[in-house]
Image (cartoon, rainbow, N blue to C red; front, side, top):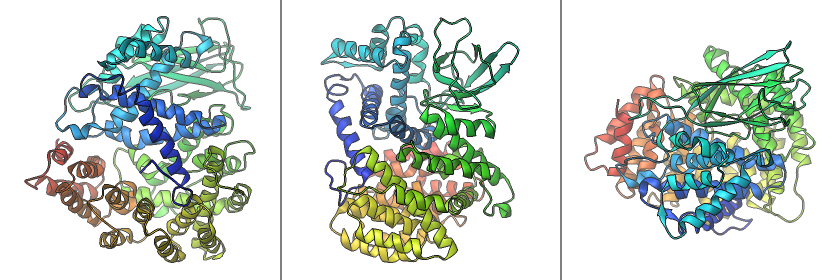
Length: 627
């Protein structure tokens, strides 16, 4: 899938994917081939480390700081929507598991993506002083020592961690290595609670953190982790405040890494002349859930001024999530169109029109939290309520920023020859978002101008990114012109398998209106171009519906679950690995509200009742049903 590309058939995301995948496999020469794993339990030694290397490589290919942050944000979104749920579900396991039932189920987001985050924390903790605040120099020394020690050998995660520590004997990693390695042995996502206290008379600001981790299968109690918390303080005017740690060495910076090792731990900054807004977990310095009771005003300050791009994005996400949760908790008939308040809308307008922020970064800030991410924040999940609220938020943002979307569409065009560089692809992403919102607003108002422009752009586009973005705008907004555009797209690319995968996927993942998506998906199963035995094709239609369309999948009549059970059983007969992946779509069924919960259990039980179910799928289903 990610080897060859041309602008006619591949999107900017495909070009990025090729760069990342080819980089990943090339980096395996050292971290995987020349130095490999002693046994299967050490799989993250090569995969987590190599994911970290390919993530860093992709960031290095970006230009500005906010463009580099785009890659980091994209990686964290995957972690939060795929790995955090895995850590909280029946398939939870440590980065270095100590047992397995089916080796095919071993290749997980925990071993790959969380494994990468463990390596990233090692880099942060490898710092031996202010001249290497990021830890990158120390980590490079550690990698050099690792290669020198173990070239041509099969080794362990412990060997790798010891090499990084030995190369940096004065680092926090060397001092805390035995405790740090709990990241390899303990499953689950730690929660980091935080509170701030400002003493105006003493001009001090104290942050107190608490850490905890919920029980997981086979691990009822957890020992404290080593959590590097990169933080800064932002003044009310938006300026970064100088940091002087009480009792610390002389030297003032605007960023500091606090290493949390205890259940409760505090840090005090001195010489703080105004009550600050804390910017915590900058760059997502540890794979944890941060619980900090920010006010809306504090979040708006971080969104507007924080010099850490990740936390600017995070502030916007927290604001949107808070508004969504408030609306979800309100009576269902009160959702209307007023989920978003004026302060949030104005903040999004300011981001959209910001003169220096990277276009790709703007697109991410303006993207609302996904339905999956919203669901993960709730103890009991009503998928249709979440879907209704998020759709109301999208419609409100489309209408409220209508003039701004028009400006963004016009101001970020990319004339000239196509190039898939970070700057150009970012502008195309923002133009695509603007077009989508303009079509969404037009579909609601009955206006035909922007849908007509989208169809024209679809026909005249010189590259797949612009063409597919225009198609998405029509399909995703539910406009009548979508049918014509979908037919034209299929006719244009009938012989291009990877492009037709996009065609199937778009229809399966489109927002559900009046329950029309599942009947369309069932019809597409009969399409001459659909082949269940082709894993990419099966993923493009079935996985897109079951995994990427919560509003369409979690139906009150349970028809989505019936469809899921049929497909798991059918695919299991020919490709157990793919079936086991699909089986995980109902991993988190116990969080569902009724009637979804009972219906999901019934669907799982139906699959479990199949006597000749593969060991791959049996492991997933049995663990999901276990009490």
